[in-house]
Image 1 (cartoon, rainbow, N blue to C red):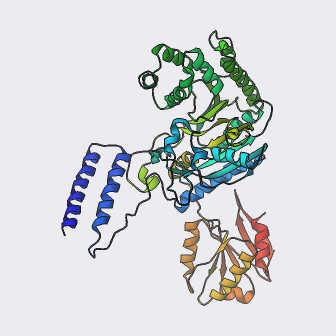
Image 2 (tube, rainbow, N blue to C red):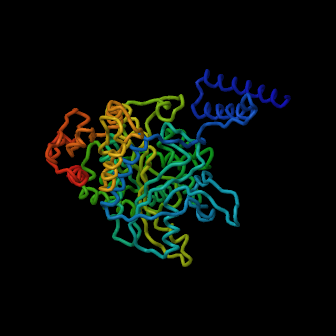
Image 3 (tube, rainbow, N blue to C red):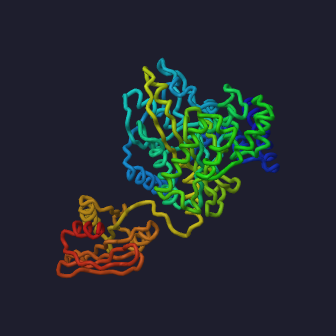
Length: 538
């Protein structure tokens, strides 16, 4: 009883903490964390019968997906996979966890976000942080020097989630990579073309693809007076410019990273620059930048890249621009050359509440920002190869969860109904005691590869069957009745228009919903299935 009283007191205190945070309008993540503690205390208390009560919630930074959300996800995945295949990629898969040493030291300051697993069998393992390092390990392990591949799988980050912005601890990545020795900037330009195609096809709104080169950054740091051993840490700080104002970034460089104010100010002048091929040409004439061979090599490749992007018809878009942006850094250590990031500049949808997104009260959603990123990483495979043989690589990763957030908002804002199944025809009955005939007919349809459904009742009402079709978006309903069986015909109804056609003399007339109108076809019956399949595929 004493333990129960202590738990009740703890519940009371924790409830006050939650109420105070809500009254102070604290962040959703902070409130969620304290609510989770409250639910855990209540679970310890148990129900009236003293049994343990489960806390019914997903782990922090994860979510469930309902059928409507999964239908949207499948549509997005199909668009992305279609683009990858159109560009000649093949797919692979790798384990969800890797040896810890495989992942260690590849992500710079982000290495602290790697999930380490408990030792279960003599191996120190970690959950994969991305799909790029496992891909490099795969190439080295299998001695592959030439491949164009895509990989879609879940990755894990011990991050502070912001779920209303599509930021999770468990999420999918969609990667496209080209490995092999090729002429400069041709594969790199194709990766940017792929990003442009996918974002345009998904119609997420206006976007901008920012481009830079790690060699330009390193050359810039050198001529601005950054010590060699501070290149990577200063690069990580510059990478925060999309989230923090320059004054805060400068403060971190000077106060936390020990950089001189003079060097920071010089960096500030460069990272404020944006443009296209003209900016690259101007920087090649810059007195400071031209002192760095590394920066000049990067600037020459940027010029070449933009010339290929023009041929790919990527740079002539007003709403979907490609910009040479010196503030783009991307903090991952393995990048060696060109880097890029796609950012949504206008989502084009009204914000929805977090409640609509994940079933919990919360703040309104905000811009999701970056939706794709990548770059060249020529040295990563060599880290794993026993002989240090390098395989040049370039790739891009689509931030799929952020794309889903936008697509879900668009679905909420649109009156258009999202179909969660692909059923083409519902087999229904008009009278009682026709279950056997319905099951025979639907078996014939299934065997013919037609997507069909029947209600799991012996004698359902016809109205209930038709309502199910309307609710599920099933376009056609094949109706069996005593007279139809006697005449050897099937009555077919178009659900949207309620038009019906009944075949006579072993002929069946019915409508099929096409993209714009209903077309009428004459088919023989039996067999019904082969005729219906041919028409639904036409």
